[in-house]
Length: 149
Image (cartoon, rainbow, N blue to C red; front, side, top):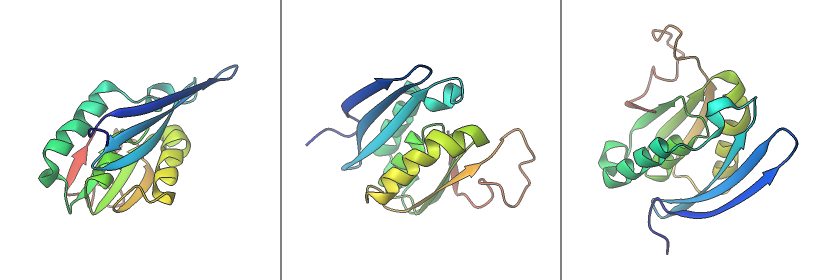
């Protein structure tokens, strides 16, 4: 059995303009499958950053901060933090990022991990620009117990 937060495997493919990497990550006794994409379209949101992995490790050590709560992962990118929150017992998670990221790599990762029973709760994807008015009642942050990012 792999330690929590452990990188289990990595597979990389490269086309003319895009490099795609799939990583398996052990979180809360589950294995998340996360795709990364380096291309002009994905920008910085297509990568799993070390700071995201550090936040995942922190949440694993402090599950009580997320368990049975609603969480918003703002600037979600690949969704690693929001998906980890779902694997660690959050009751509802929204992963939000700018539209091109939300409709690309983020949606792919959420759909794949939701379909395969890797998550404990509902995870939704929202296109959201955090520079816009936060008082919008439809904003991902409106009904959240806490924000991740």
